[in-house]
Image (cartoon, rainbow, N blue to C red):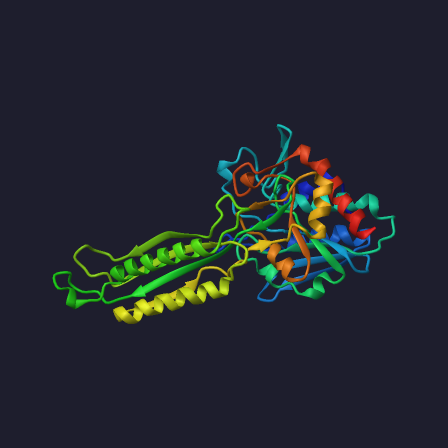
Length: 381
């Protein structure tokens, strides 16, 4: 089965549910989407590999390569979507709907539509000899764990030197974004009657000290690290939620805090986690109380592609736009770690992603195809 036309491809991709979620009851595989892409790309001459995730065989990455050589281009994206509430949509989220010069559907912008546009851009170039490979790379589980991107190795992008991650950026090139670590702090104290504090060891009072220490760390990090390219130029640390105790006349025996820390390029997530552990261990020893810290998700590194790199210059010339930054995370650092010059750039807008009535504007279609063809001509023809 060869690739159908653009709207048919988008209709099929949107109509194939592939929700990933940290809530197991809502999580599903992406294999039907991966298999559909494979069935479209193989007849076009791509060498297609479907690579199931080691611990989740119902989820997979797809790596489809056309041509050989070095210096080629990776067009990358994720095939999963966030969950949605059908009742909040004005149309079926799994049916591509056109109205108001927009194409509505779950994943239309974030980011199944990018794959349809990439394939459409390639079609007119198939008869031309390639000097370097074009690689379509589709991942699993970006919206929950990024396990798909974490599973990639250098051999998966052999021959390529450049990567475009097609997240919705309004077709603006993005050269940097912040990273994230998200942690749980659990303090196990000893409950007792509040009439005599000697009866217990308050987990909530210990958490008060932990929160003060985290805010002190935040201040230190903000004084040390600054990136003027971001609207909020320093790291941020958010104390997101806290739960503890069960009654005002009982010493709190257990307290749990969840927080996240957003890093700027140049900061190392692993070292930050170690520093937080060190500081909290000192509090635990001083108060003779048990404090445990556990990541709520695997961390994602901050990303920055140097502005003087070849890919940035090429994209600047093709778009006429100076690269910008965003605060949300993408798979870009994983591709950069594989040795690829990387930019984030795709149709649609991030403020439509993860929202009811997600859409991709129709006036992004032709510019997206032209931009991708310009990159392929530069790097692969």
